[in-house]
Image 1: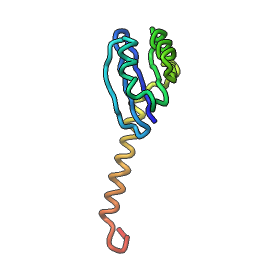
Image 2: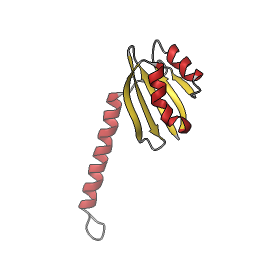
Image 3: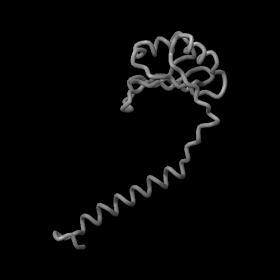
Image 4: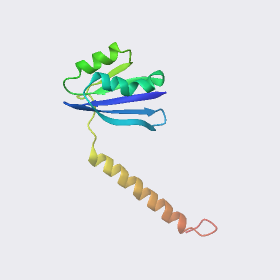
Length: 116
């Protein structure tokens, strides 16, 4: 099963197709041309589970065009998507790293009978 995400900008778009194991099969910046976007998607069409388009403005032509071409489509509502919180992500990553360091340090200081 394949998935497609399209980040639509004012004069170009970024198209990514990945499989259900998150392996990227296609990743390209394309001009905002329905013909070129459909040509990029066409080789993957039979296995494509869905296409998600992310755009704040000017998405109608692409969404309508892909629906008319028969692609299963969802529009990502950017105002409903929670913003990536860099501080929280850093804190989580730091905590995991600290835990891993502490866990490996405690393992290395154990004696053969499991006592520190």
